[in-house]
Every structure is written in C-alpha cells, then in structure tokens.
Length: 83
Image (cartoon, rainbow, N blue to C red; front, side):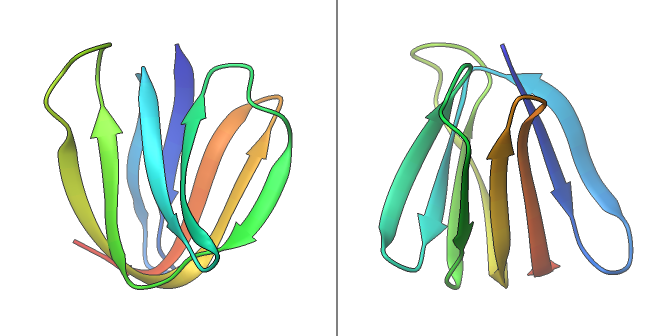
C-alpha cells in the first residue's frame, strides 16, 4: 500500500494507506503506486483521484495549485487549497 498525505497551509486533510493516487501534474496527470521512483512536480488545478484498493471506484478531491512529492515514505501533496 502507498502512504498518501494531502496537506494545505491550514491543516492536514488526509493521511492514509491507499492503492494508487492519480495527481494532476502541470505536465500531465501521473499515477503513483507503492514503490514509485522519487519525483517532485508542481500540480495544476484539478482533481486528485484516490483509489483505496485495486479496481476501486476513485474518490475525487479538488485541489488548486501546489506541489506533489514522491519519496521512500510515499506521496505527499501540498496543495494551496483542497476540498
């Protein structure tokens, strides 16, 4: 499972183990699974898709601006706004 955190300047929105997250990167959407290579990207306004399990219907979380970082700990999205 992938550790996923969604943070805004005001608070921690999500911190959970999920199967996959699709992030709206400024250069295109990208999916992150457990074991993904380290990467850092800016994100565009759009929706993060969170898949709790393989084959699950994704949950959509609207975000505005920010950054996404994938490292050995998982995926952290630092969004200017989320909801």
